[in-house]
Length: 305
Image 1 (cartoon, rainbow, N blue to C red):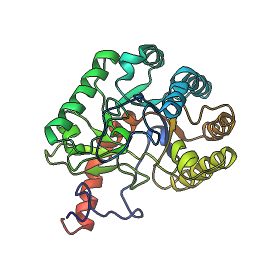
Image 2: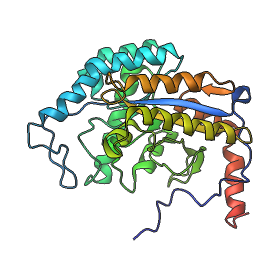
Image 3: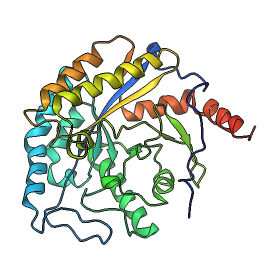
Image 4: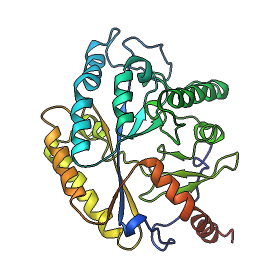
């Protein structure tokens, strides 16, 4: 049995080499809308049921359809208002089912990264060859429909295998959102030796975790976002931090929840020294300017240098 994922070593938060963001920003701020497609009656997976209801799971399916019909437009207009380009965690089946959404996001120069094909088909139980084929298909679909190969990956429904990060790196990816272990980007070890990085993606601020799992009220969720920003902004004066808000168009965009999200966006973007950016741009900047110094410091602290 493995004691850990094997992708990174312990690296204490304080005393690391300083991260400098463009323009001297304290915080690299990005929003990751999960734009997903769920099947009404997906193939069964022995490790996890796709729906809590028997098939056909109309309640779960239809609220997610609401997200792509109604919620996406609300969220897109809000992000436009505050100058935020979304970094889309994309179920690539959306390119077939809702190409109009992909088109609108392309027009705004949003980033697209892979979230698998369907969010009702999990990595659990796949062979390595099957998972490689799934990841490759998702990459090729995004490239075909957006004109650019995705740099990042988030496993469908957060379903991982021991090989997920290795496979994505081998297929040309440069960053993952699948590790929730830090508030700064960190170098990762993958079996092919590629330069690969973890970009912070917050489960604590993920609207589905907040609203469905932790039963947080909208007003409290908005305050959680502001409190998180205040801490990261203060610490970013010493070394740049990352703040991510992962959203779902069938959660944050419901009428009674949207105001709390807007208030938080207005608060964050109203501060100076905030780099409003994308996941890809964070990864590229870190890889170009900080990756090697971080690796050397990790090796030193773990007795490798």
